[in-house]
Length: 143
Image (cartoon, rainbow, N blue to C red; front, side, top):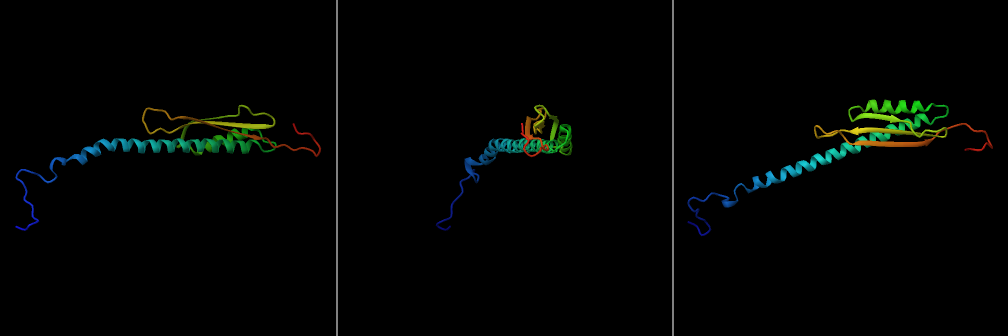
C-alpha cells in the first residue's frame, strides 16, 4: 500500500454525517425563492396594469380635447383601448368627472390580474387632465 492511500473504516459511508443535508437545505430555501419569484411577477403585472390604465386615460384625453370634440369621444376612445387590452386588466371603468368647458379630465380604474386564486387584483386608478382646444380671435381674452 502506498503512503497516501487511506483505509476505509468498516460501516462508514462516503459523506459521513452530512449526507442529505443539501436536500434539507433546498427543501427549506426553495419555498422562499418561489415566493420571491411570485412576488416579482405579481409586481410586474401590477406595473403593467398601471401603464395600461394611464395609456387609456391619455388616449381619452387626447381624443376629447380636440377643438369641437365631445368629451364623450374621449371616454369612448379610452374604452376602446381598454377593450383591446382585455386580457391584461379586469373591471375597467372610465369616468369624465371633473370635465369643464376649458379642461377635460379622464379617469380610468382597472383591477390588475392576480396570480393567487381567489384574490381579486389590486384596484388601480389613473387620471389625465388636459386643456380643451378652442378657437379664439386675436385680442380676445382667455378665461
